[in-house]
Image: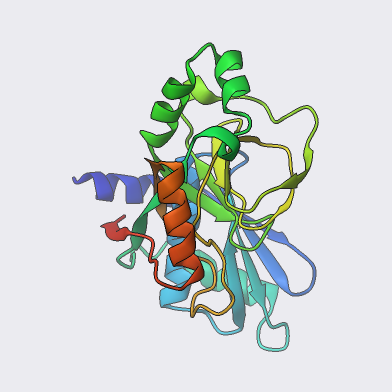
Length: 253
């Protein structure tokens, strides 16, 4: 049995809960924690419903541990939808799933990384070691939320795990790369935030003018690649001119 077959059977073995979310939404919940296995089950169901959408579904939204399903109550009922979803979960068929591995340029220097020195001191590491650890892993995108295109990514190396800041900032610059708990993220817009800022990327995570406004999708992976301030300025200029495309490759799940 291949690793993919084993993973598929493990995901199918998770017994979901069906929870009402008002009159137009149904939540299919697979667990109560942030876990790659649970995320796999969520994304598998999302792919199943996208490939063979039951009548009445309007939209599906993956989260850390559940799939939110919005539906038209004039076209279907919660009972009908639950029955259709249960039959698909137990049906054994699984569509081919692919994702993208994104190569995201990040400057970890100076003003681009206002919390890096403090983070390093708290962790008992050199700043260079923090950068090496953070940029040395591929991160799984569990979900998008908080802001349009904001990716919640895991799993952060254990050596970098810190609680959120005791005092959140009122303003975090767009493009800030941050860590908190076992997660890392990128702020697509300027906003308040309580995560530790260790770098910044010049790319644009959300653009309403693009065919797919959010650059990332749940299930994608991200690899951070350190760049210099001069490279940051050049990429930012290219992004503003519409002449920069974030490097990526397709990966099988």
